[in-house]
Amino acid sequence: MKNITKLGAVSALSLIIGASAAFAENIKVAFIDPLSGPFASTGTNGLHQFEFAADYMVNANGGLLDGQQMEVIGFDNKISPKESLIQLQVAIDQGVRFIVQGNSSGVANALTEAIDKHNKRNPDSRVLFLNYAAVDPALTNDKCNFWHFRFDANADIKMDALTDVMAKDENLKKVYIIGQDYSFGKAVAAAAVDMLGTKRPDVEIVGNELHPIGKVKDFTPYSRKIVASGADAVITGNWGADMLGLGKSIIENGFEGPIYTYYAAGSGITAAFGESGKGRIRLVSQGDINPIGSDEARELYNAFKAKYPDGNIDQSRIFNTIGMLSEAITQAGTADDVVAIASKLEGMEYDSMWGGKLFMRPQDHQLIQNMNVGVHTDENVEFDYDNSGFGVVTESTIEMASMDSPTTCEMKRP
Image (tube, rainbow, N blue to C red):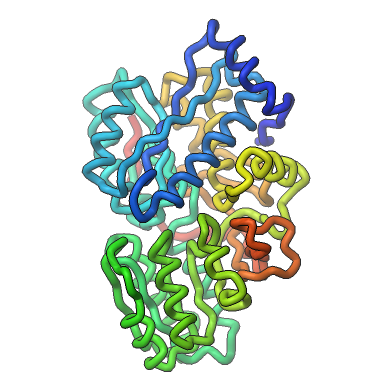
């Protein structure tokens, strides 16, 4: 499927919305993620990207179907599963039919179970869960359900790509694994041990520990253990303030090897690492930013920076989520029948402006896509993060990563 092309200037958006409001109700998308607390910068930047994607890719083109505009509404879940369920109900009561969330797989697990129960009990107000960043493999395995679609690669897929790159490093002898103490952190650690053991059985795991999520103020004790272990490389799935705190502490305490990460870019993290992270921080991600995936993506990125001078497009999958949802609504011919929309998302092939094809695997609703491993640097950077001059430049690409990976999902369809 082709991306929805931009037909009008975003600056004319207010006129379009005003003209269409009389004809159709908005298509509401609830963004349920942290907008306060230690992970507020991550959530706020994500919300801005969703709002911009809806305006630029949908509303500035006249909307969907009979001119319906897409409205993204932010709900602050304070990174709490309990608060997320409260906000979910508030969103449903407001007529929202599409839920997006990504920060914390613990939250995602709570949401997917609640949405499954709600949809069984309330067929007239069913909702879809569009997961753009929560990567616990269980969500598309044993805990899969028809209402959940993941637009990010899961933790196992990302680790498969990372360890493909690490396995080629002949100097790699010892690895230290550290992460946040919840389902995602545990999944990252388990995948690292398993995949390194298979691809490089000679590599020794010299540390494997978890720390409380969002509560560690000083990572020095952890960093000293890493340095003392003699590790050649570190693997971490940390994100937000925990990624920044851990990474800075590791470097400041004298560790000189590569730090392999999932979420070490944007939201102030890139600027904070700056020169200290150059050539040291490596990141697994999807979507080509440096070099950019297409002229269309370049135009969009420049428009985003014009609106949000201090913002970053550090999650290109957000734009893929809006693009594929819009395509599914168009194909289904409805914005209300979420069963019909979900059926169009299943098996969808989509050309991403960020590079490569996307495939929503029907058996488990896991998006299959190219995975990149890039390096934090200020060389060959067209689009930096945090206005720092530093960005992530792709070094390796694994095409359609883990396309044939197994799943334990037993999908039950309505």
